[in-house]
Length: 86
Image (cartoon, rainbow, N blue to C red):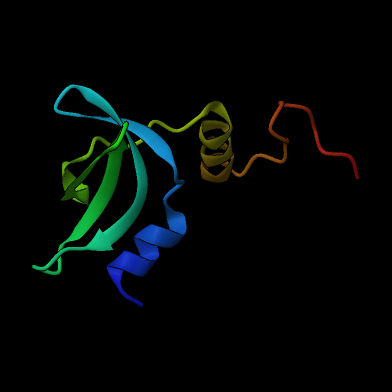
């Protein structure tokens, strides 16, 4: 399994981000002619391909933050902080 497959399987698309101060939508990931993993970004009718490592990292939503905190501390609470029913 290559990096392109791993990133493609785990990247939520379409997603919004900023490239050089301009808002764009990342539609997918691909390989360029140099075999670099690139993000295929769209703004209006324009397409732009850029190295995936040049994009800012996504900000996780509140559920992801709670879930990762729960995993780190081994909590038995659900996403809203209430104990799970038996």
